[in-house]
Length: 206
Image 1 (tube, rainbow, N blue to C red):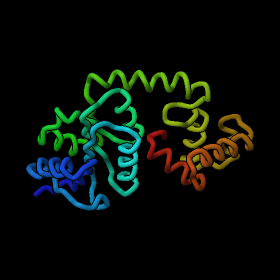
Image 2 (image 1 turned 120 degrees about the horizontal axis):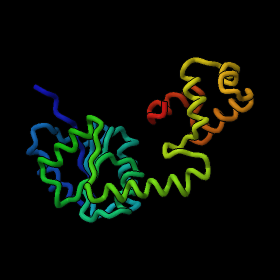
Image 3 (image 1 turned 135 degrees about the horizontal axis):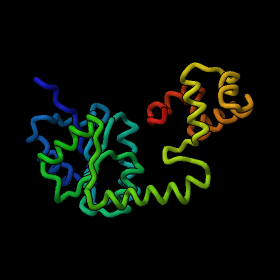
């Protein structure tokens, strides 16, 4: 028998949480758990995504949930951006979140897929484009938070090259290579080069 997906339910009030939980218990693919640290995925029921709701999402991810799905009564451009920035991988309007649909989104989230109402996707892409154009690009950064030069250096570190070899291959000074790596470790609060490479791999940069 396939293993059920350990799912945690969070909501702003006990009644909303009980309602979500009751609906999801009808789904054969899911196993509801009371401890978020035991959950692979979490569903968060909210009225709208503001700062407090964003903190709930971040806390769940820090506590070990791999993916967070948001179900919101009010969903606008700002709410979508708040949820995405907090780390949610999928967002549904409450009116569209039937038990079957929500269960399918939770299972898909565990497989690495996201979900977003189609009418808000274009708006989100537009906001990301503005962020890249007006905020990140003037600083030489990509959407992932790295510069192209940092990505080049990290790829070579991942290939096992030392500082001298990287400098020679990229026609940089050794001091420049060291500064690039220092900037990355400082900006992302990383411990060393190995940590920087691991972080970049998890972020999908290299």
